[in-house]
Image (tube, rainbow, N blue to C red; front, side, top):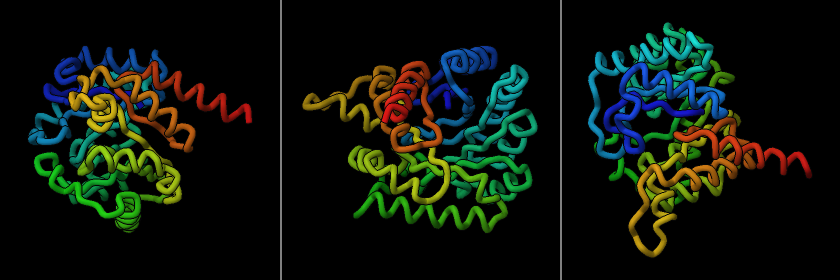
Length: 265
């Protein structure tokens, strides 16, 4: 899953693809590099980010979704708003990736159920403004698994078919570096939830912390792509359905090698 952020303030590439034409070109480039689908989002969810209004999010997202879908690209929409999900699906999106798992907008679950498209349920404890304060766990793997299971039950009760669900542990969302690393080390337990697993580690803070080592100065987000590819290889080895990344080529190569090694056993 290649990422196209149609935002001026994304933590990793804010502003580079803010123009619709540039964003569509970026999505096509990601497909050429090996992306199977392109995730289009118009609202930054970096820690501390403030929300944009619905009209602005629609203005950013829908033309890009329509442009990519018209080129035959498989498109997902990254949104917490039901209205954006509905219009993006109407424009050609075939999957809704909601980082709140349907918690941010009570209209999301019925909208996705009516659209009959796959839905990503991510582990989420709150909006970007205060999510760092919510990163408190005694056993992060057990708690994230339990909270995801409860959310899956709620989503299914709301009308979304279980076979259309994808789960995401929410790396970086209400989590510190040690929590993220623990979750990556225990992807098998998350797969035991019985749904396809999406892993979205790309360029995130925990990778910066690992790469910083003793210096305590993490490299910029755009210098974390090799580290991202390492997590992608781990995720592939553990049977993840997809990985969500900003730069596709290194991850596509990493996944290809992981699959080849598995095939040689």
